[in-house]
Length: 69
Image (cartoon, rainbow, N blue to C red):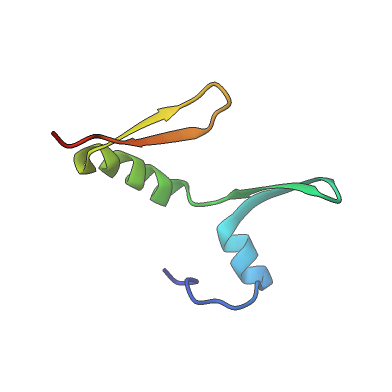
């Protein structure tokens, strides 16, 4: 919440929000954000909201909304 309205990145923001940046080439980068606590909290709340989550073989999160009958 602290940085939700920022317009540019400063060193402080990067240090607080980004864990790792990998540069593979000019067109491919990987950014690992440091949101684990928020992410885990959200994942724990999703089942109560009628949402199923599965981590696939490529380590991607698949989200499926349960159909209301």
